[in-house]
Length: 210
Image 1 (cartoon, rainbow, N blue to C red):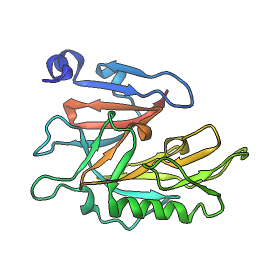
Image 2 (cartoon, rainbow, N blue to C red):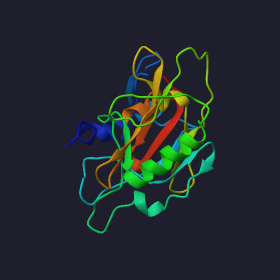
Image 3 (cartoon, one colour):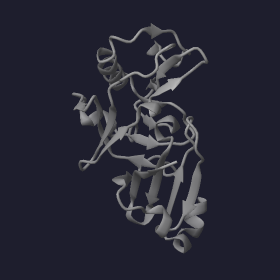
């Protein structure tokens, strides 16, 4: 049984963490409803997988680039009849991964909106990188997660355009999964308070940062 499961009733069945951002700041871990269930968060349902009881699944139903939702079927984020697939929120995985067709749709939409930026080679896990050496600043389209019931989480650029060397190379921090499972990794969670209201089967994003 998890630590929270053992003492959850004493702590109000709630906890929150904020992962240290690469841009600075400090991380945090808090327990109890007074601190871990903030007003103003983007709240989405926690789902229980029929096969993986120890993971936190969320009801992701779509992705957007530049404020426009992409034409991706919601079914690609759902569990299959045998329990495969779904979307896990995981701090142990760095890069967010989606099934191949989903990743390609996201990447292609992003690339089509950044045609004016010079491309570069990056680490093998990334296939979309840019040479931003000498740029004071750049504008890139937003990336958004659409959740079941209507909530939308729009990521800051620092959570999907990351430096990979000291020479100004930045990469689009998503990758294709080798399975039907989607994983929201820790790069996309950095600097955002992630709150778990376990008693009510909810997970919240924000409004606080770190």
